[in-house]
Image (cartoon, rainbow, N blue to C red; front, side, top):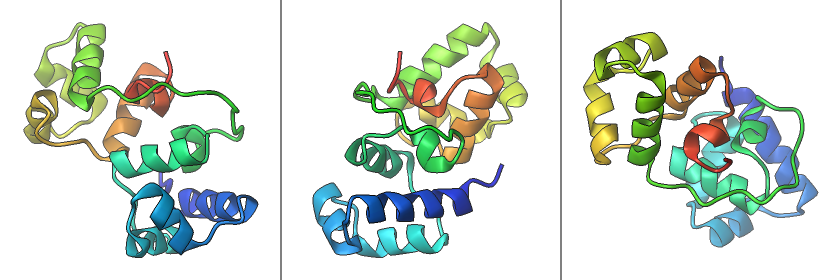
Length: 146
């Protein structure tokens, strides 16, 4: 699913609702203004780290930001544990070998081992694949909700 246009739209809506400029958002989140501009234009998807920062700032779910959920839950989300912990959790939950997990979930196996070690982070589409496979939210995959 191409969530980039909906993400750009939702970010624009949230900034309008919060009456915050790109510059102010950059200052308050630590995400550089050029990146925020690219997000708003729909030119690129943020990293997992950046989208979590934005979701925390706007007190919404990552799923809402990406347009995968229509509701903006007014909930307190948990701090994200290291992505390597979450990857290992879902690997154990699947009861599959790492190779079979990658194939079933449509993940790049060349990167998967780096994710497990915590040396690289998955992309949002990879996190989406895990969420779709397990029929759960992206926030659940990231450990923001229990």
